[in-house]
Picture 1 (tube, helix red, strand yellow):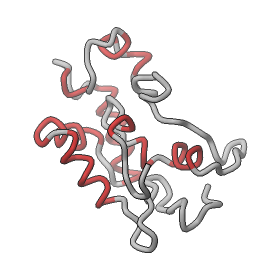
Picture 2 (picture 1 turned 45 degrees about the vertical axis):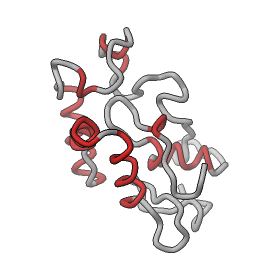
Picture 3 (picture 1 turned 30 degrees about the horizontal axis):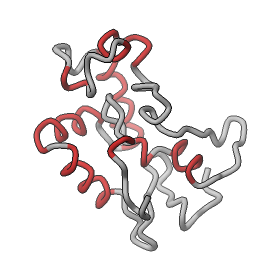
Picture 4 (picture 1 turned 90 degrees about the vertical axis):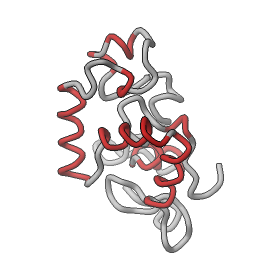
Length: 142
């Protein structure tokens, strides 16, 4: 993958951009695991987890009836709303807004905006939504 690019397989059904997640960035940059500090994840779709946050309690995701939560008649469900509220508060990111943009503008336009939004000004790498670090500039990021 080209530095600073985000692959569409890294957009989870819930609207999370796994490409800007600290666990994905640690995994993709070979940051050593540290119990309670650094976890590793290859992304929801690449791991065939559909959506790590919602799948276990979501029949449409479990049964592969939808690709993204916005395709569900219950969008946004209470679980997604709770998750979205936590991410808005803690990380200034909205999964519901991400999904609305994907539905409205398409995945390619969404990816372009995400790449611009999370591009590191110093090196062109990806800035993490969880801790604001670029794992290219700060490879020991946790």
